Length: 116
Image (cartoon, rainbow, N blue to C red; front, top):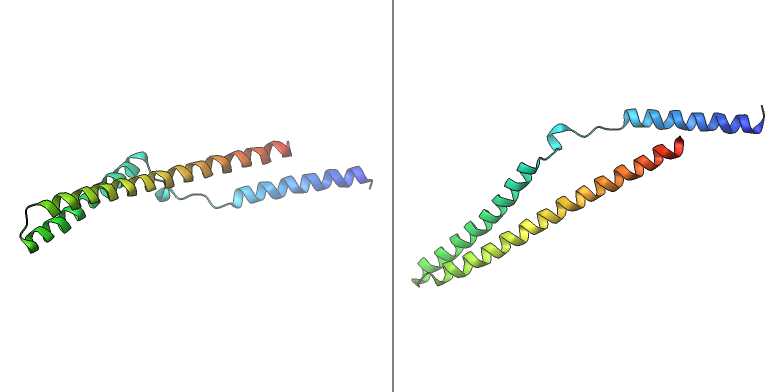
């Protein structure tokens, strides 16, 4: 056997190994996929939870101290700020996941083009 024949056989073997790895690669589960509506509800719930917790703490302090609703207003504003911050963090997390998926897909396409 000559050296070019061995090289060609190695390339064919590598192509078959890649094909087998692709077939046996774990597939993403359907229940792990989040639709846009689910993500939107998650953000709404985070915002409402921040407002609710702030309202509860503020109202509790107002009842405890017998003050005007000063603590309630203050803690509702703090709860709103915390809810918005949590929403932004979730949005950034989702965006980073999408970017990783996009760059991962691009590297797979490059690998496929190299084999051709």
